[in-house]
Image (cartoon, rainbow, N blue to C red; front, side):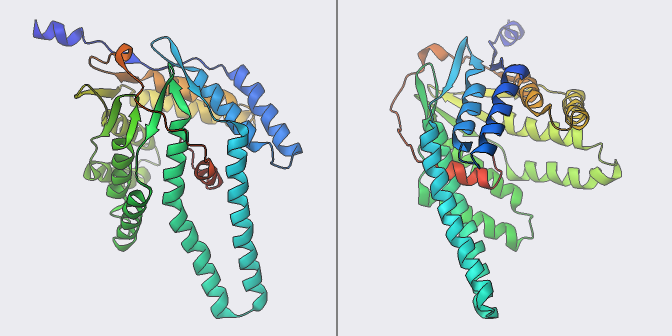
Length: 323
C-alpha cells in the first residue's frame, strides 16, 4: 500500500504555450521601434515581451499575468540613465583635469557606486517584479528589508574577494535563501534548502573536467546546476513543504543547447525569438511540483503596489535578467 500511495502522489507542472512565430512578431517589432526612437521605446518593448511570456505560462489551466506598464518602466529607465550620465560626466571631467590623484579618485567613486547600488537594485527589482506578477488574481510579494539585504550582499562580496572567489558559492546561496525566504504568493511562502558546499563542488567539478573533456562536460554541469536549484526549492503550504523536481537528463541538455546554438548560428541570429520560446517550453517540461499542492485553497493576503522599476532597469543595464 505504501508503494501505491507514493506512486499516486499528484504532480503538477507549469506549462508554457508560447509560439515562436507569435513571439517573433513582438520581438522584431520592438527592435524596430526601439531603434527608430533611439531607445526610448525600450520600456514598452520590455513590458510587452514579459507580458507575452507570462500569459503563455499556465498552472492548473490558469495563465500568469504581468501587470507592469511601460510608463512605470520608463520612469525607472530615466532615473538610471540620468545617474549614469552624471557619473560618466564626472569621469570625463576628471580626465580633462589631467590630475592623476583626482582621476584615480573619480574611478574609485565610479566603481564603488556600482558595487553599492547593485544590492539596492536587486532588492528593488525583485520587489517590483513580484508586485506586478499574479496568477488567478493572487499576487506575489517580496518582504525583504533593503538595508538587511544590502549588508548581506556587501559581506558576501568582500568575503568572496578576500577568499579569492572560494566563498562565491556560499555568497550565491545566502542571497538566494534570503530572497526566497522573504517571497510570498498569497498565503504561500517559499524556501531554498541548497548548501554552499554542494554548489561549490558542482563548480569545482566543472572547472576540473571542462578542459579535460574539451568542454563536453558543460552539458553535465548545466544539468547538475539546474537540478541543484530546482530540487532545493520549496513551497510552504499550511506548514507543509511542497517540493520541486527537475527531471531533465544530460541528453536533453545536449539537445536543447546544441540545437539552440545551430539555430542561432545558421540564421545569423534571426531565430533568437524561436530559441527563447523553445527554451522556455523545454525547461518547464522537466520541472514537476510534487506532493499535495492544492492551488484551489491559495488566498490573497495583501498586495504590495510597488511601482518603482528603477532596480529592474538597472539590472537590465548590467544585462542581468530576473526572468
